[in-house]
Image (cartoon, rainbow over all chains, first blue to last red; front, side):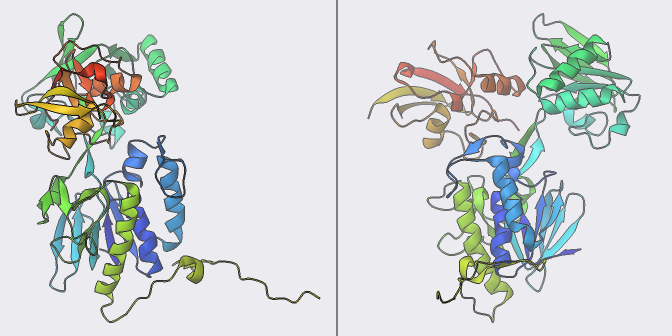
Length: 352
Length: 110
């Protein structure tokens, strides 16, 4: 069981900055995120895109903003459970919470801060009949252990980086790799595109474009897929052991929707007059995942919400203490790792 | 203020004729959201970066629209329910030439 003061669901910019504000109050944080790396959308969807409305940054790349936040919170030693989705919330008799992930990891904290953005990123699934039936019976949306595909006949669909990268990787592992994409053009790093071209020329990869997988065949286990050439409408049945559609990720509110929280417009309703607390005392929602009158889904608003939320969290954890806000310029920043950052003291010395 | 008329058929098949401003730096996805013609969280998910296809629509009228950018082409290549007349609403900047445009929202990806 992972124990912490504030359990943050979502490691996007808002979740990360919460660690800093909590740290100033000597509260420890642990973050859960379904993605394998921190940064949320900023890291997953648009790391190379600029943002122009972070106060004090005329221009910052989303990926750099994440790196800066990670640096800023480092001294507060946040814990991370990455690549796991927070699935259930359980309230204990003492008012604290247990959050369990889809992989069974349990977290215990008096405060839960949901900074879940648009939800957890789930693979986009092609719209095919019988798709659900073949999930884990030949169809997978992510490659966890490439060894599963050793000496198998694999068909990958998609035209982005992950489709290209896995095609290249599995060319050496699987007995047969087919890549199907709806266009002739691929959108990926240039060297990946060139590598796939090379593998195709060597006959190590079977490339079918422009084409689409239109049907899955098999009794209980996938045995073949039907691929339709877009240009000629000609359909071919290809014998495969595995079909891996790689069409990117899309966010889904997912299990959060079943936590008993008040939901409006696919977002969690919070009290914006005070501390962004939800209808469950001790559970807060901050950043893009919440809604209130006048809500704006901006990173800078998430930072503000995180800051106020931490004050309430402090009061819940320390009901008898009174906290007086202190500027970091005055009080410095004392990390849990023993580090101390503070403003240099002025020199008092006579000039003779 | 200069408004144009746009007809938008929502995902339930209901037709809406709406006024869209040409002087507010808006795109079609934002117009749909401003009139709440699709529930929040089901359209414009990426915020307008051509990085999801939640604002995909089918252009029904014969308006000459600006060419697709590489980003839009690439996204539509990965999207579902794509037709020849598919566009991403977020990439269609509201302009006077679009007066009378008629579009239908593509089904939500589940």
